[in-house]
Image (cartoon, rainbow, N blue to C red):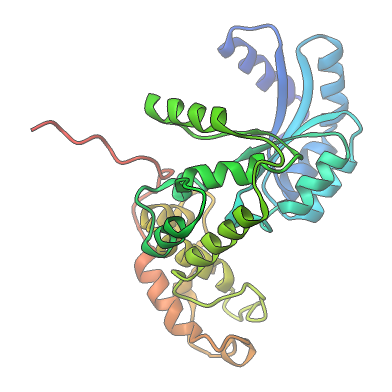
Length: 310
């Protein structure tokens, strides 16, 4: 939405008006990645934010983030007065985006760490869970449901300040409060508990149909197919039984550009000799595209509509 430096004032003014307040306590530069950060930085967003804080329109400044660790570190190091960073983080995505390294780096710099997607969009809270995961939970000494293991894995880390859970019903609010009240905080998980979480991770991974390790040896593809990303979206959709979410990640506004999708594969087979996992890449690209492609505009995934009463 930012095309020039003057847009900062306009957008903040609209936000304050819609919220019907004079000051926003914690103001985030939202969804920063390399491209977005470079743009707002070069427009002077930090100097602008300092001026808004001096005027009392903003209390404290933070940012939310979606990119690689190196970009995250660059943003953290660019400004001495960040108070919080908001990152996507859960036990299945421990090394994705900012990841564990980013969490530790931000906390080491004195920033509060706010976690989004602690349940991976609700996928780690499914009840009942997939059969391999259910077996692990049944064998664990500590009786907890999947949602409890996911939250406590985060709360156990002293660097984590807040977890944000997308609650859509009052029942979920009450449940999350119950889980947090029961036990939460650093040191609440023991060594055998952490072993359970590792087993849960492996159980989920066992459901992944394509043994892709995202080594990226197969790219660049001569036809520009973003092979590792296609495989990740397809694997996640199958692993978490969420094909609707997979279709959104493939076709939606933040999905894969049309000229990089799986149907652009010409079966030249250049990728086959480069793949250390010996994956039949062209065949899996066909399967992935057939499962994921939609010519209907995709909205973000969410809960299914309520059933009509009989």
